[in-house]
Image (tube, rainbow, N blue to C red; front, side, top):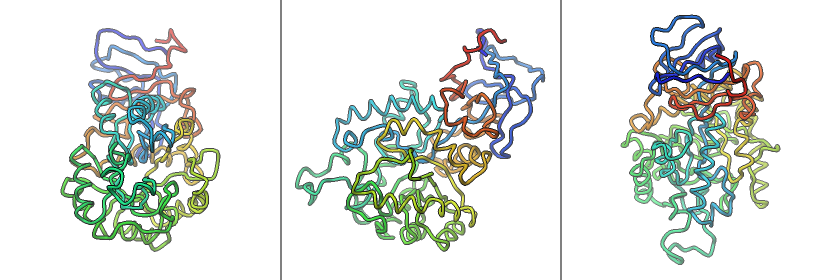
Length: 433
């Protein structure tokens, strides 16, 4: 299955079947031509090509799928230990996130929507070709009220100004603590100024944070609307962290376009989301071996949250809410490596075809909400002519065996981003032409 190269441009991937991420089906024997970073042709096998590419890859009967998209990823913190994230040397955090970005790409995740953290520099380095990594849709610093889900100060650091004007987390760009309409406007505009493709606001209590019970609602509607207005004036949208009906309903009234988590919602709130065309970005949070590590003091909140996961997916399906998928992995390199496994376990609620569509075409539709702030205008999440050539060749058919996605090292024979091969395991069958 080794590629053969000449001086000609373009790549032909032959002897494959192609996953249609809109129809949720795998077609017949096909060939895919990539040129100039885009998919140029998707054609049945055997069709003569007018301009044959110079590089040929034999897909060995595998399945070409679009590059996977994680709609709730923390590029700076997914593989970073908690103590390093909170109090460590920021240079170490950045270097760790750079290494983790390359590993993310090797797993076939060619795009992530970053849900908060200091990732503007990482995105810049990846886009410039300095480091390998996925396309990043950055949110910048997570915007939080005092005592909210993004406030990780120690009690000895309050009142503000007692030990410097800003906390460590604020200084490194992880969070922006803002209270009042004017402060929220400033925090929102600062993230947009740095290149945020969307904003992340904390609208309710969280599991890992120390000072906010899970049931609390954070920010007033006026404060939340200030962030929304700043985003809309900039041509983009706000996503919020929230679990409860009160927090989500207030966010919807303020104009928020995407809810992250929402494990404690009820029928009325889910119906309201559907009515207002609000997205629901859900994660497969379960009390299993893949659970995000949380402090012992937060275990009660953790169990309360995971107890609502099944019900949340049921409500989303019942009311026809648009569901996106993401992992929200934090502070654990071993868990970050299970990104594909977290996707595969979505068959607890959806068919394999629905799962794969969600992590490709559907998540790409969510990314498009950033409108003119979209940093990557070529179509993502599809294998079609004119789309970005973000492609994965799976050794097998993931619709027949979704667990293939859980082990990229064994089952992804080729990973391509923007037409450039970033992983090539085809040498295992050298000599095929």
